[in-house]
Structure formats: structure tokens, C-alpha cells
Image 1 (cartoon, helix red, strand yellow):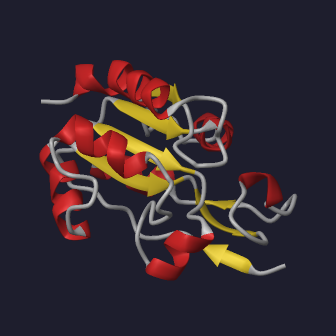
Image 2 (cartoon, one colour):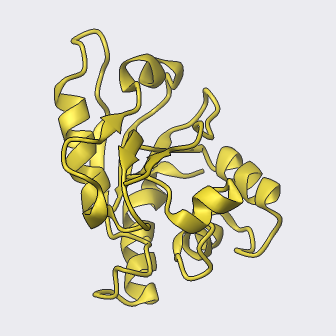
Length: 170
């Protein structure tokens, strides 16, 4: 089973919200960009919240995240997985990113918003193991934007993300 690696964080020190995925899917890894699968609802949702078209150039979308005080990363640094599904992550292969070093670089951080249940479960484990010197922010559970999450409509996903994130956006 191939080992896959996540991307560097997209963050500025003034971020108030950190959105965490679990691990980029195959389309994202191939493109070298967060949420590159054309049916993933992340960019349409965040675009609506940040006022940028979902099909704007990638760098413009990232700039809109920065302007809104949103940082972006994944819980896992690496894992063994075939395909894109979180359920295909090989047991025992997951290695988390270094949040003990990363979180202190975001002094204005108020919430960590987990994009889906896998990100939430992994980050809760990470948060529980943070040293006492690192303050763990509030953790929000958001419905996954993945096309595999067909249990909610795009409108339902947008409503949940809006309710969770808008209180923390400018």
C-alpha cells in the first residue's frame, strides 16, 4: 500500500480558524493543491463564506482564506492508503502532523474546525496528547465536504459550515 504525505499548512499568524482535513485525496495529491477533486464541496462552501468564486485561481482562493483569518492543514502528516477514502487508511500507519510546534505559531487561533469525522477523531487524539504548554483551542465538528459524504446535500453542508464558522470570520 502506498504511503501518502500531506501538504504544508496554509496559514498566517493572524488566523483565528484552523480548518483541518484528514489527508489529501488522490486528486489533490496529484494536483498539489488542497481540495482539488471537482466534486468536493470545500471551495464552493469556503468561497461562499469568504466571498471568492469557487473557480477563482487557486492562489486567489488561498488569499481569501488568509483575509478571512482561516488557516488550512491536515491532521495527518502521512499514512498508507490506496485511493482517497479515509476508511482505506491502513491501521497503524497514520502519523500526525506536529501540532505542538504549529499551534503556537497561531496566537490568535480560537477554533479548530474538523472537516469530517476522521479529521475530528484524529485531532481529538492529537489534542489530548499536546503538552500542557500548548493551549488546545475549541474543536468544531463539520460535515465532510468530500463527495463520499452523500448523506447531506450541498446546501446542508453549507448551512452547517456557515453556522460554525461565521461567528469567527470578519
